[in-house]
Image (tube, rainbow, N blue to C red):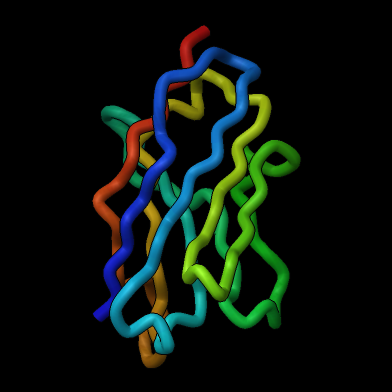
Length: 120
């Protein structure tokens, strides 16, 4: 089992930047993809970005965040980051970190989420 803990959320103004962190622990050797998702009030959870743990594939982004958000990883620290620039009020949501582990085609480990609020 993999445990994920997000941090870095907060209240910012439109145009500001934030960096979210996701620290992984436990059976991290089994992780092959890490991703960020978000869920705004009254809406379904949506994909934001993903990164392969080995770096053997291109990072993926939702169209709504392309050019503004960047996902990266620190293998030594077992941490994934989401750098969010030029934030908009519509980016307001709870952001979740997730992992795919070997043998699972879908995300099967989730963090508790961190709130990001962007004021206009």
